[in-house]
Length: 376
Image (cartoon, rainbow, N blue to C red; front, top):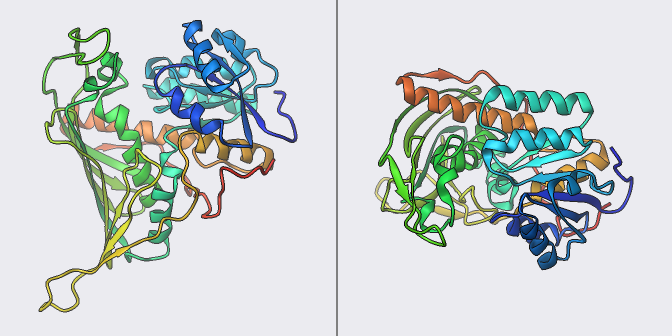
């Protein structure tokens, strides 16, 4: 490991597909990190992204793994190879920031965490949207008692599916994808930030259609199989108290994204869409005068600097230099995966399933965390 002691932390990226634009846009605006290399199996794609964003080195995956100036590598590959690529990054002596989920099964994901721990390296796991001002401001409001004691949450993610915009969406309906494994990490991560670790889950699942068609791009009209449940209704129980009911569906003509509502003894807080970094936060108070039917709705001012993907990596980079824990840890990512796989198992067996993993206290970003400041 060749981590420098001062100046911007060197970052490499493996995977130059759709989501790399979001990472590159924001990472290039953070003074405390510097993107040095991009690699992809399709080297021309990596080189095009490097030219677009002014990254000095681009080519194959080995180029990124072997670059001595790269301290952290961002894994933007498809879920089925997340662990394989992350293990290669650890073997190269680099810290890992991986897109969600950390893997697609428990054993291989635990193997990654064990390898990283043995090597003295860190694993960070998306989504870092929940570290944005939206969820973090709401989390602080709940922690200071603005809604009293949190009792239960309701979340909903429903629409007709990513094939209407993604040029190659088949992997999103394969094992490791679907509305649960693709979008579930955002909602489960937000709930764990509020309520703490999950104790058990129950679920019902269905498959709206056994096949789907690509709607856009060069593959438009091409049919592909659906390998996972495309709708799941979920009940969640948390270790420290509290419950949640959640819907994940790509079978709905009606689009309803980003519904996260936490109900407490003294109010209900509406949290912004956990797939985004910010948004409106409101608290609705109970009626105190039953003769007045209009409820009090309070706008909660959003605290912090609004940026985008790469925020969690930045926290990890600063934490490495400071010698403190980062927030979006591999253990957090593993607990989210364990919860999601338990939901799949609950849907398959029509029973409650205990989530075996757990977590300690989940950290928060301070309100004055400034991604655009040069601190290193």
